[in-house]
Length: 273
Length: 184
Image 1 (cartoon, helix red, strand yellow):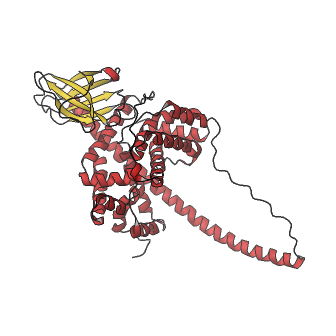
Image 2 (cartoon, chains in turn blue, orange):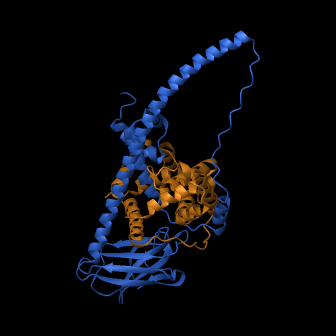
Image 3 (tube, one colour):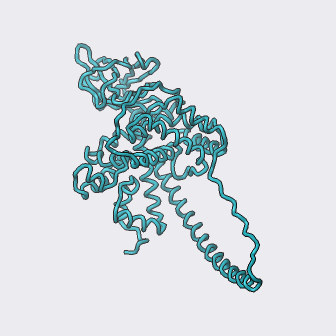
């Protein structure tokens, strides 16, 4: 098999490569293949990196200290210090005998001509390779954005059909205690029992804790409906597959619980409605 | 359509031109998520804040190298952060990791997107969590060890006392499942 030929074997190595998990002979083999300028590998690496970016967004955001922010912004008061190119020191006058100087000049001229020709050709090849790789990356980036947009649209359509279902009702949730100012909306389809809850302006839960959603029917213990964190803007969305007796009035509440959640609420209520 | 990426790309251009206000805006937008990722990798709040500072200084000095065709500004910054954090943990004794607990600092005022942009951001996070929930615990563990701790196939096999081939197939199947769930 020629090193430049893209095969299914490379397709299998690329996810681990993008993840940084590939090692040993497999890493050397794939790197040698990528070095041939394989456009398909470039395309796939960009796609996998897009997925990994999404994976990174699954962490709980933490607000940085004011001191860190201040240090960053203070350091940025001057212009960006991009790496500077060191000036080339001029070559001093030659002190060799005249004939030696002529011979050296001729040799240098021949060598420079050879180097110039080689550089011109390899520069052209490099430019074409870079252009091809750039196009492959653009296509991969667009494919990834299209996939994400389509997935987001499907989920929005699902939410919209739940909200607009006949008999669907909405409940407003208000923030309490440390989440004063937070708001929430619960939308319930009484026929299917499906529900979706949006929360906004919640602080990020402290390390080792999570938010847990509950629905409570009159005279019964609270039923856990899922744990969740918030995004960098303090917002969250929780889908509930089925709420029992969905047509009956319910109270919805969010509490702070240890990571992983609890079968019964143990922490303070921070959102209720 | 989310109006933020094009606005953020413009912010990156302005940072490259030396506008400190643009750096402040991108810092306020993404530093909580970046710090969350750094803390997840490093397990120490003070170290995470230190690397956070380095990351945004790198954004300041290298915004001109940012290529919008390759990643969103958020993705570029997150991958810079991951790479720096993994370099840091490779340099230190892994047995001393995760000693410190996070101190609950007050939240900075966040810049909130509005309307559908906000809804889409919530949808996206929820989608990632659903995708992760679709993996087997073993697949998820292997991917997390590689992504958050920078371990290779062989190192994961050693850590989990599992055959190398099993680890490779868990990662391959898990990554493909993630891809499928993220785009479904």
